[in-house]
Length: 184
Length: 456
Image (cartoon, rainbow over all chains, first blue to last red; front, side, top):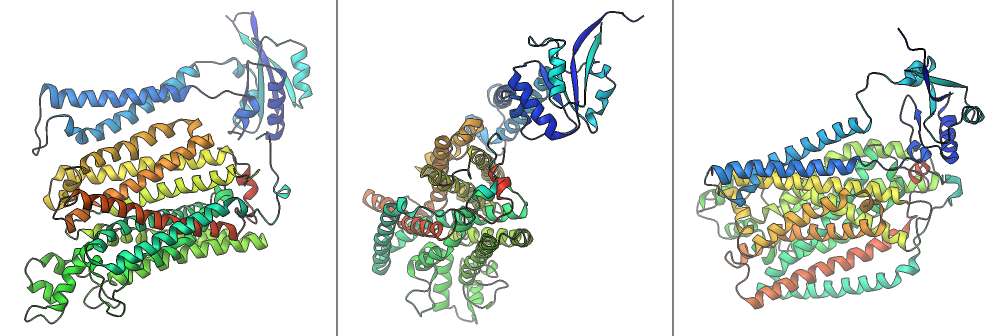
């Protein structure tokens, strides 16, 4: 029982070379679109600049995660080994100067917390995992992981227009421009 | 990315150093160097207690510049062996730095050459500094009865069984007499010679490419760099064992060579950044070096801050935990008295501060920020070598105290400064002279265009 209503997701333009999609991305940026993306089989150097993407805020989260890991490890060890149950090993002091023994764990937890923060913040920022994406309704789009390059301008972009965006994308040298619809 | 520089827009003969902008520097450095060398020569010729003390200052200054030069060899070799293209634009700077082994070798002679000349005996300050050489000399001149050679003498004398055991490595001489390996003073020549040969070969290949623009030298440099890297590793490791670790022949650490190398490569990258930065600020490298290059070099410097911390801490950690007296003695004299603050400062200055500062992307891309960080890194590398070498002076000369009295302490600190300025003047003069000889970037390298337009 499929819903007969559909919502326009956006226009999907197909390109067949890196050069075309790169320059097309620059022109889309100059046209002032904000909700759009480029889909390519491999990373293209300089594409971030061509698209005018700002720097990711992910490093800030990773820094906080790492600092948290460092603090956690220190407190975990200091509280258990010095404050609650002072453990004397090989005549080593049971005070702050036994900190070299804590460094390996502090190092490990810094790495662990940084890595987890990086991975999970990344997933949250990409809104993953998700079960479906409207772009997969397009038959052509499957080749984004093979040999084709795509630019999708989404309908939620304030500059989106049913006719103008289509002709704009065709003007960029796209092999084809397709209206992608989302089933409600 | 928006300003792609095509290589045919660059002058084919490369870019020369605008020497007029560095004339004052060159003269000042040369004068400082000559004055320092004269003062050093005076102190050494005078001999006595002052020369014994000054030898430590001299070794410290020598090691600062030797490790930086050795680090430059490493960066050239790594660049070629890893087939990288990003650093072509800045590769000439470390290539020129590797040529500075020659002045360093001449400057090193007061410590390593026999004195008085022709006697084949090490000078008194070397015998006091490297105590095992002193003991060898003593036993050689006054052998115990029944000893046919020096090694027998070490076996028969009281308290020298360790030197008997270590004789295959720790011995002097230009033949193998009794040892399995070339003697300490022959190794001085081997290390300087091989490292200089490696640097020379790499520079010559690069200069050949400057003239012809052929692709061949790139492949040959890659081929040679691969076998040169292990040779380099052996030379740099055993050089630090011979010249720093054997200051106390009873102490040993298998990580010591890597520790010195890590600091040297780090400081060397910092010096490369400082030189490239200075050249950029004085109007060189237009369209050649961009913020991307500083970003990449800054990342390497950052990674070596971490690598140094990893090595230095591992060495300390294992010795601290195992708590064996013959190993802990190294840290025992550095963790007590005034040196304790020095050790603690090293932890923060050599690791924590540059690590946090260089984390930020802007700190690596902003020319002033990355140059300030580089200067800081060079200073802390000096601090580390000071911390490695100078405490041995108190152990060898002053019966384990830092100095017998305040006047001696002040004199020794002045000596350290004097030796450093001597080396700085001469090294700086020859560096400017070397940079002025050739194009300041490898203008014939086919990958120059790729390097100029690199995106970090």
